[in-house]
Length: 237
Ligand SMILES: N[C@@H](CCC(=O)N[C@@H](CS)C(=O)NCC(=O)O)C(=O)O
Image (cartoon, rainbow, N blue to C red; front, side):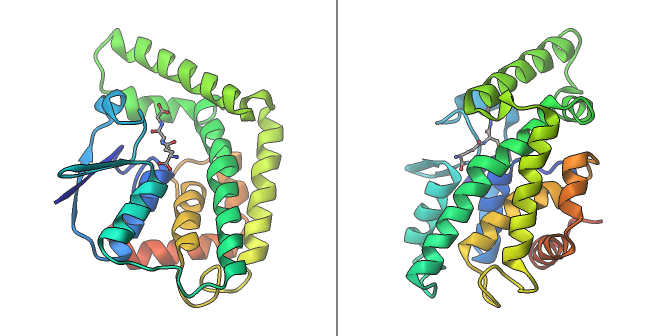
C-alpha cells in the first residue's frame, strides 16, 4: 500500500502542510487507499528534505505536483480533461500563485510573526526534553527564516506580507464568486490545490491577522468547509 509521509494533523487541519493536504485530498477524492506515516523527526531523510513524499514499493515520489502526476498515471485519472485549454492554463497560473506566493505568506505568518510562533513551537517541539526543547526550535526557526529570506518574502515587513496575502484572498474570492468550485459545479485539480492552501488560513485554529483576513471572505470559508465536510468529516469543529 502507498505510504504518505507527512507532518500529521495540526491546528484543526488535515495536515500542518498545505502540500500534504493537497495529496491527502487527491487520495480521498479518488478513493485511493494509503497509509499515513507522520514522520516529522525524519524530515531530513526525505528525498527532497520536504514533505510530502510517497513510498509506493519500488517507486518513491517527492513533491505534491509529481505525486499527483504519478497517481494520475497509475490509476488512470484524468481529473482535468474536461477543462478547456484556457481554463487549464488559468488553473496552472492560479496554482503557481497559490503555491509559490501565498504559501510563503502562510509560512511567514506562522514562523516569523511572534503572535503565532509560540503555538508552532509548542506543537512541533513542545514534547522534546530540555535543552533540546529550546535549541531545536531556535535552529528550526532560524533555518525557516533564512529560507523565507532566500525566497524573497522575508525581505518584507509583517504588514506588507499581510497586504500581499490579502490581495490573493480578494482575487480568489472574486474568481470563485458564488460558484461551487473554481470552474463551476465540477471539481478540478485547481480546487484541490486551492482547498489545501486556503484551508490553511480559513480553517486553522490559529487566530492571527492573516487568517482573519482570509475569513473575511465568506465564499472562501464556505468553499473550504464544504470540501472538508465531504472528504474529512471526521474532523470535529
Ligand atoms: N514543492 C513542494 C513543496 C513542499 C514543501 O514546501 N513542504 C514543506 C512543508 S509545507 C516542508 O517540508 N518544509 C520543510 C523544510 O523546508 O525544512 C511540494 O509541492 O510538495
